[in-house]
Length: 376
Image (cartoon, rainbow, N blue to C red; front, top):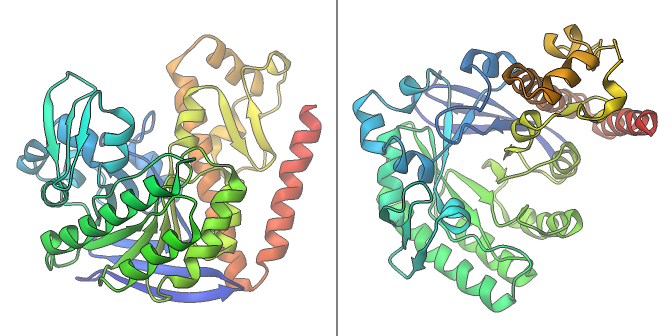
């Protein structure tokens, strides 16, 4: 345990990095995948089961928590960790993306964003200062600057406007954050799919004394090759000694390709959302349990998996639960998916330490290909 936030680089294999983020509430082994606990819960999982999969950290969201149950209420009840029974590190997203994607009506200006709740239509104002205040009230370990995220594709003019506004908001977020002992604040690189804008954003944020830097505005509609091209452009301009977080990403292959390029941290709703809709992620690729071909299959999803739920239940039973819309099916598949993501991260970390990342990725992709071929 430490009283301060810190990051140590432990090993490299090419551009890929193995590191350790230390916080007062525990260490985060990188590359790390953060299960998304948007509204103070990783959907369909008990907190102790999330931890048992190997997760060191989860993510919560300012937008959702400010609307329900309210940041002040969470603070009065002892903070987010106590509230959701997760004593380990928590990162809170700033709310910018959700304001863009979920609010009914919104009006953006230099001050911030005025919007109506998607829940009840109530009116709210979110600014860099209010986002920092909410994250302090929640008592999360890693705060994110307030930014504006635009969907891709967009014009360079729109990307430039949002990027420059996000830089000004970054300065305000940094000032409002102050010097919170044991906490960290990450800046967010924006700039759409424009190389000059991304580089300008990365360089400006690198000079602002953030504890880590995130790459935002990707995984918002663009193909994978565009996302990877932006990573190739941005990462050389990020400080080597600080953690790098790719927001909202992604599929197992997205993660593998991003780790190759030097990304340290990830989050995505994909494994939990897929689990609630009958889709499993395994060493042998994706398995759609809605498919009738599983109805009479007595074999487990993966008899060699570390996750007991992937070993101990037949595909036929999981298919039945999904078709019957039983809650247990959602719980089992969510656990299986989160466990697989954590197993993938553990494999990536070990491979980087051993200098055999290329071999590990080749073996992983071979497993995915075998599973896809078998499914045909």
